Length: 228
Image (cartoon, rainbow, N blue to C red; front, top):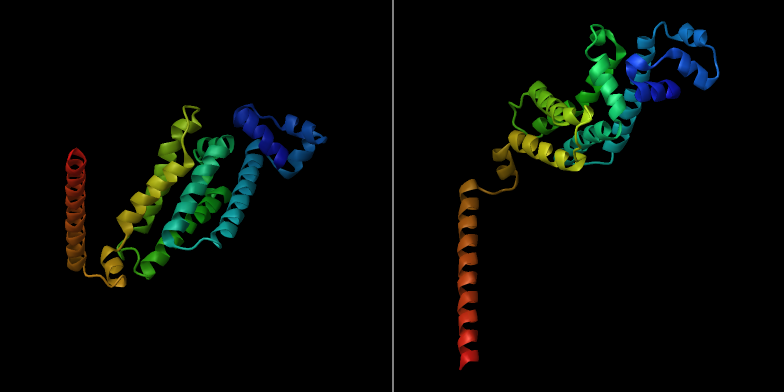
């Protein structure tokens, strides 16, 4: 798997040949065909192994992260980071496997569904606790996150320019979280009436203006004292 992945990533699917993979690991080409009927079957197995490693890492990392926003941000950032750091493998999956007519019948398709279900599970949990709106459309949220990420990074995968996984993750999670947040529940949980909160903000602004006025008066007084 490691050698096949190395060759596929270096050469691309079309240019990669089974004989080179066999030569690198010191076996005859026919031995590989005993286990993988075609080059495409081998690529699917490589992609499956890649996904399984990522899913195991995701689950391990998520156990130490609390808070809906933080958990969403991690999943979004991790996906962006994978695209940024494993560009060749992402091109193989997105540009080669996904466009194939057999994709939905492969194990890679099912693994990709498991991959995105982590995000849906976090949104569902936030809906159950009242943190997110009850009418949040789960499938649309998923499509906006992963579709947005792929659109944002597609030029990079074509070899055009670069992007920041950290900045993109912050921007995406901010849009998603603000759009789904149950503002009524947030205010109620905080024990603050929206009208009361507005009055407090108005008072704060008046106090700030008063403080600025006093500061200006003091500066003027100091200047007059120095002149005297």
